[in-house]
Length: 159
Image (cartoon, rainbow, N blue to C red; front, side):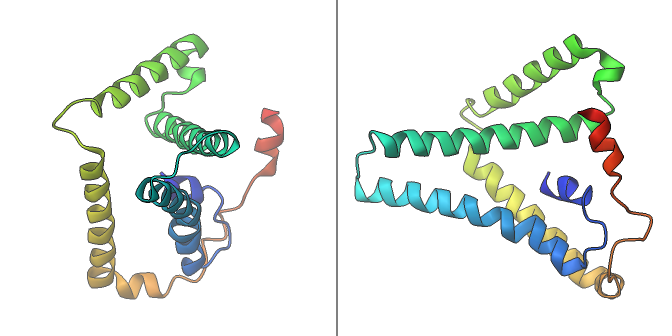
Protein backbone atom coordinates (compact mmCIF):
# COMPACT_ATOMS: atom_id res chain seq x y z
CA UNK A 1 0.00 0.00 0.00
CA UNK A 2 2.78 2.44 0.89
CA UNK A 3 4.66 1.44 -2.26
CA UNK A 4 1.71 2.13 -4.54
CA UNK A 5 1.04 5.45 -2.84
CA UNK A 6 4.69 6.51 -3.03
CA UNK A 7 5.10 5.42 -6.66
CA UNK A 8 2.59 8.07 -7.69
CA UNK A 9 4.93 10.82 -6.47
CA UNK A 10 8.36 9.36 -7.20
CA UNK A 11 9.42 11.59 -10.12
CA UNK A 12 13.22 11.87 -10.12
CA UNK A 13 14.00 10.10 -6.83
CA UNK A 14 16.90 7.70 -6.53
CA UNK A 15 16.28 4.10 -5.46
CA UNK A 16 17.54 4.59 -1.91
CA UNK A 17 15.32 7.66 -1.53
CA UNK A 18 12.27 5.66 -2.58
CA UNK A 19 13.25 2.96 -0.06
CA UNK A 20 13.46 5.58 2.68
CA UNK A 21 10.14 7.10 1.65
CA UNK A 22 8.42 3.70 1.58
CA UNK A 23 9.84 1.86 4.56
CA UNK A 24 11.85 3.98 6.93
CA UNK A 25 9.97 7.28 7.24
CA UNK A 26 6.47 5.74 7.63
CA UNK A 27 7.83 3.31 10.23
CA UNK A 28 9.11 6.04 12.56
CA UNK A 29 5.73 7.40 13.75
CA UNK A 30 4.27 3.88 13.90
CA UNK A 31 7.21 2.66 16.01
CA UNK A 32 6.90 5.67 18.30
CA UNK A 33 3.16 5.09 18.67
CA UNK A 34 3.57 1.43 19.64
CA UNK A 35 6.55 2.17 21.90
CA UNK A 36 4.41 4.61 23.89
CA UNK A 37 1.52 2.13 24.06
CA UNK A 38 3.86 -0.66 25.18
CA UNK A 39 5.46 1.52 27.85
CA UNK A 40 2.08 2.51 29.26
CA UNK A 41 0.93 -1.11 29.23
CA UNK A 42 4.08 -2.52 30.86
CA UNK A 43 4.27 0.21 33.51
CA UNK A 44 0.57 -0.13 34.32
CA UNK A 45 0.10 3.60 33.87
CA UNK A 46 -3.52 4.68 33.93
CA UNK A 47 -4.43 6.72 30.90
CA UNK A 48 -7.02 9.40 31.49
CA UNK A 49 -7.77 12.98 30.63
CA UNK A 50 -5.79 14.73 27.92
CA UNK A 51 -3.30 11.88 27.47
CA UNK A 52 -6.14 9.44 26.85
CA UNK A 53 -7.76 11.78 24.36
CA UNK A 54 -4.44 12.40 22.55
CA UNK A 55 -3.66 8.68 22.25
CA UNK A 56 -7.14 7.84 20.99
CA UNK A 57 -6.98 10.74 18.53
CA UNK A 58 -3.61 9.63 17.11
CA UNK A 59 -4.84 6.05 16.81
CA UNK A 60 -7.98 7.13 14.98
CA UNK A 61 -5.98 9.34 12.60
CA UNK A 62 -3.66 6.41 11.78
CA UNK A 63 -6.62 4.11 11.11
CA UNK A 64 -8.48 6.65 8.98
CA UNK A 65 -5.33 7.39 6.97
CA UNK A 66 -4.68 3.69 6.40
CA UNK A 67 -8.27 2.96 5.40
CA UNK A 68 -8.37 5.97 3.09
CA UNK A 69 -5.21 4.81 1.32
CA UNK A 70 -6.44 1.23 1.20
CA UNK A 71 -9.79 2.22 -0.30
CA UNK A 72 -8.25 4.47 -2.94
CA UNK A 73 -5.59 1.96 -3.96
CA UNK A 74 -7.71 -1.17 -4.20
CA UNK A 75 -10.54 0.62 -6.00
CA UNK A 76 -8.07 2.16 -8.49
CA UNK A 77 -6.31 -1.18 -9.08
CA UNK A 78 -9.59 -3.05 -9.59
CA UNK A 79 -11.08 -0.22 -11.68
CA UNK A 80 -13.89 0.18 -9.14
CA UNK A 81 -14.19 3.92 -9.59
CA UNK A 82 -16.99 6.35 -8.79
CA UNK A 83 -17.33 7.06 -12.51
CA UNK A 84 -17.82 3.38 -13.33
CA UNK A 85 -19.97 2.33 -10.34
CA UNK A 86 -21.79 5.53 -9.41
CA UNK A 87 -21.27 7.38 -6.13
CA UNK A 88 -23.92 5.48 -4.13
CA UNK A 89 -22.74 2.00 -5.22
CA UNK A 90 -19.09 2.97 -4.74
CA UNK A 91 -19.70 4.07 -1.15
CA UNK A 92 -21.88 1.04 -0.33
CA UNK A 93 -19.35 -1.38 -1.85
CA UNK A 94 -16.49 0.11 0.17
CA UNK A 95 -18.49 0.09 3.42
CA UNK A 96 -19.36 -3.58 2.92
CA UNK A 97 -15.79 -4.53 1.92
CA UNK A 98 -14.19 -2.73 4.87
CA UNK A 99 -16.78 -4.15 7.27
CA UNK A 100 -16.04 -7.68 6.06
CA UNK A 101 -12.29 -7.10 6.37
CA UNK A 102 -12.80 -5.84 9.91
CA UNK A 103 -15.00 -8.81 10.82
CA UNK A 104 -12.32 -11.22 9.60
CA UNK A 105 -10.20 -10.20 12.59
CA UNK A 106 -13.00 -11.22 14.94
CA UNK A 107 -12.65 -14.84 13.84
CA UNK A 108 -10.65 -16.96 16.27
CA UNK A 109 -8.40 -18.59 13.69
CA UNK A 110 -7.14 -15.28 12.25
CA UNK A 111 -4.83 -13.34 14.56
CA UNK A 112 -3.49 -9.87 13.72
CA UNK A 113 0.03 -10.84 14.80
CA UNK A 114 -0.02 -13.73 12.30
CA UNK A 115 -1.02 -11.37 9.50
CA UNK A 116 1.77 -8.99 10.54
CA UNK A 117 4.28 -11.85 10.61
CA UNK A 118 3.19 -12.99 7.13
CA UNK A 119 3.52 -9.44 5.76
CA UNK A 120 7.02 -9.11 7.27
CA UNK A 121 7.93 -12.52 5.81
CA UNK A 122 6.69 -11.48 2.36
CA UNK A 123 8.71 -8.26 2.57
CA UNK A 124 11.95 -10.06 3.46
CA UNK A 125 11.29 -12.74 0.83
CA UNK A 126 10.89 -10.05 -1.83
CA UNK A 127 14.03 -8.30 -0.59
CA UNK A 128 16.00 -11.54 -0.71
CA UNK A 129 14.70 -12.27 -4.22
CA UNK A 130 15.79 -8.82 -5.41
CA UNK A 131 19.24 -9.25 -3.84
CA UNK A 132 19.70 -12.73 -5.31
CA UNK A 133 18.04 -12.44 -8.74
CA UNK A 134 17.79 -8.74 -9.64
CA UNK A 135 20.65 -7.01 -7.83
CA UNK A 136 22.52 -5.97 -11.00
CA UNK A 137 19.35 -4.58 -12.58
CA UNK A 138 18.37 -2.61 -9.48
CA UNK A 139 21.90 -1.32 -8.91
CA UNK A 140 21.98 0.54 -12.23
CA UNK A 141 18.73 2.41 -11.54
CA UNK A 142 19.55 6.01 -10.75
CA UNK A 143 16.19 7.78 -11.05
CA UNK A 144 12.68 7.07 -12.23
CA UNK A 145 12.14 7.35 -16.00
CA UNK A 146 11.90 10.89 -17.39
CA UNK A 147 8.31 10.24 -18.53
CA UNK A 148 7.27 9.83 -14.87
CA UNK A 149 6.33 13.42 -14.17
CA UNK A 150 3.77 14.80 -11.76
CA UNK A 151 0.84 16.49 -13.46
CA UNK A 152 -0.29 19.10 -10.96
CA UNK A 153 -3.17 20.02 -13.27
CA UNK A 154 -4.90 16.78 -12.24
CA UNK A 155 -4.81 17.86 -8.58
CA UNK A 156 -6.17 21.30 -9.40
CA UNK A 157 -8.96 19.86 -11.56
CA UNK A 158 -10.32 17.82 -8.62
CA UNK A 159 -10.72 20.77 -6.26
